[in-house]
Image 1 (tube, rainbow, N blue to C red):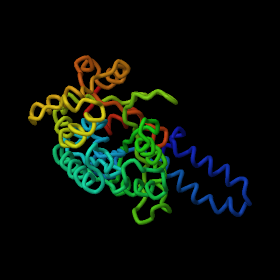
Image 2 (image 1 turned 180 degrees about the vertical axis):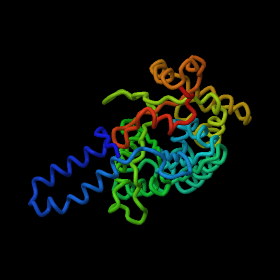
Image 3 (image 1 turned 135 degrees about the vertical axis):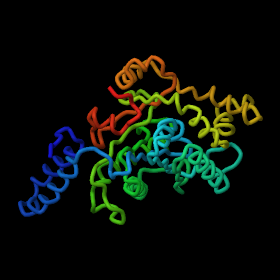
Image 4 (image 1 turned 30 degrees about the vertical axis):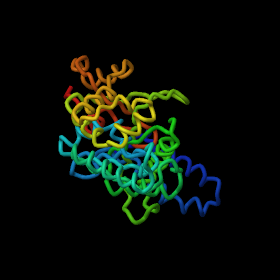
Length: 320
């Protein structure tokens, strides 16, 4: 077995080892078996958790959050027969100008399930209140449980800097769940993963404390219509709440086909100039023809994939 000294898990081991050295020797020796097991978990090669292929889970604060940032990626995996699950940490019961509470939560759950059905993925909405999400141990355990149950190879989430507190805390919660998904003595009702997944951030345009880094950029031209279909299912959001909030409600057409065309004009997913180097890295000469894409940043909290592993986890990149 080859040990990757850059694996994020080793930083946790070093912290524990340093802490243990300051205790009595008997305690230090008692920790050694745990340290060995942890080291073995951290050093396992990053491949699929099982033989069923790449398994992906994405977390958003609200129903429709994952769709906006990774709907195209999800559609590509689903098209290849791989398993994808979107999870909304809140039920979205505050996101509307004229309805709310349980009625809105039920409507948004139904919209999310329809969105998932349209591209062939699972979509789960947790029953935490919209606008009240906090980085509590209870919610962290919910996330650990979902990642383990899904046997995820890739975990996606927002970065913990955003205009909305629910978005920020979703990033913090998923960040806090990373590595812990491999610790057997936590959330003991679900078996721990033997390999820490690769954790990725969704794209955002916030620059403080540091801007988003486009490590992996995926062309979605071939599934762009599917992404629009998915977003179109979130009627309460893309045709009501968000246009109302942005002062655009009067622009939304009433006829379904016309309003879907309007939605497409509002969600271009154009390739940003700073994404071009990553596109060229993975698509070569094809990159110049790519019009729509989604970008992701590799976090420091999960497994650190090599280029070979990235190409295995993203099998739709052209062969070199």
